[in-house]
Image (tube, rainbow, N blue to C red):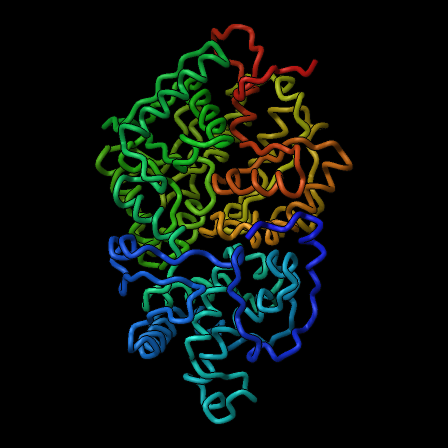
Length: 534
């Protein structure tokens, strides 16, 4: 089914109560609004139960005979293990403060995409099975039976949530509905109900070290190809190393940085920076992925994928880890690493070999974000920059949900941007759409798949709308961000909602502005385009 044209899609957004009560409104699994089922080979490879061929649009999902008992036992287990989950089931008063904060509700008008109602999909079962009021009063107490139709509803709406956590910013009780979505996805995995776009990348990561399934020698070859592109653009040949034992720093970045535009321009910027300051670093071709699709799957999968980076740092004998522009890698490291795999006692507290700055906040994880590292270099006057090389761009900045709300990184990227370009060419989107209140790209959390394109464009409507504001008002022509998924998904979003706008990385802009020792006069940027418009 073709995705509606932008105005056609807008015309369908009519937030209004449905004709029937939400419990009596059946799920509508139509093309463009759901993801394809996980392929049995990937379900089996990752060790999840009940691998089988099935399709969401079929009546019979071939659930295991005791599926209901499995789900209820799964809920009981998680209520005991996760106090936050138990609290989130009990304390919501349905005030509605979160209702209009979700990008999927704004873009679809579907009440079940209101965070409060999305969580009710789970709470209604909790009340029926785990509270006395629900057992006695049933529907009057907001309780309902667990049926196959409920599982289909969970599948539809827990995979129409990008776990961006914007709703949690506005909840007076601090409920994080993303955590409810995570539990819903975990529970569905117990009965073999999952989506392929998440399982296949996670399986690839275990098999060859990255989501894309690229072999180690192909990963190395791709970066070496980018070395040629860097030399063409700047006249300087950088010399990255791979799997080098004894290097001071292991550099980990999303694999997309090595393979897909516009992310590759960000990686070119990293390499120029490391070359200029003489950083003693190495890539790992065996753990060539910073992203963590476990965050979208289960707590156990998240822990297993996070452990790979630290195992590789131990094998190579590095001192600490430097991480690239990524979203979910940083949310996992910042929010979950310590209680899952930390502290990383085989590493040292990160210390910049150039400025001597000790990154005290990374004492436990031993991992520093590239924007923290670069901002420190600029603040200590260790880089020579020519902001005029970015004069062709009028830039805005998209706060990635996982770095902004997940780890509180909002000022460092802006500090870098305002040093590598003329500050007069930087324009913020409206205040209620950036920093902590940033709107999601609409395709995070493993939903960056083409069969979901209609919902992706609906979910991206608020971000596209805010971007259009600065495009129309200030002539913005590039939106920078620090997340590989954003770089991939926002490209589709701007083509749909704000055509003509480009997506780029903060370190792409840095690479353009960075004045290198011994370089010839620069005439083109890292995209191979002329530095100056005619």
